[in-house]
Length: 110
Image (cartoon, rainbow, N blue to C red; front, side, top):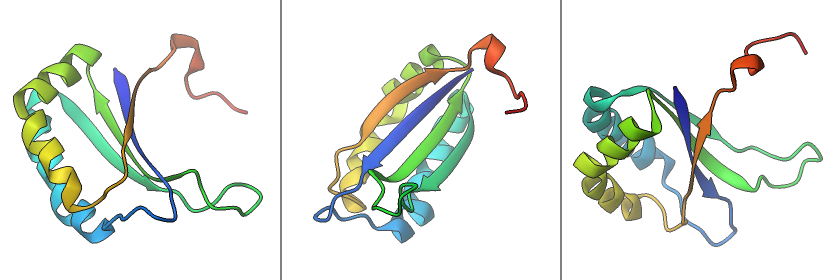
């Protein structure tokens, strides 16, 4: 399994329409990519840093796929449609990162 992080940076000048994102964009992502290996799509909204400052990332989509190859196939199949929808909710440039789950880093007590 891999976790794809799609991170939209926070900026005083960037626009982000959360209603459109949650009501249209993410349902589109789930509809197109679930048959291609998307297992879970969670959304995280940045609130602040520990010292109360503005967060560096305003929104993150955390997408779980079987593999990086499955993600690549999903992007190849429907990426153009999904990426074309992004300007409808933000003008921020997202950073995308592929993450894995190290075997020995499972759920352990802190």
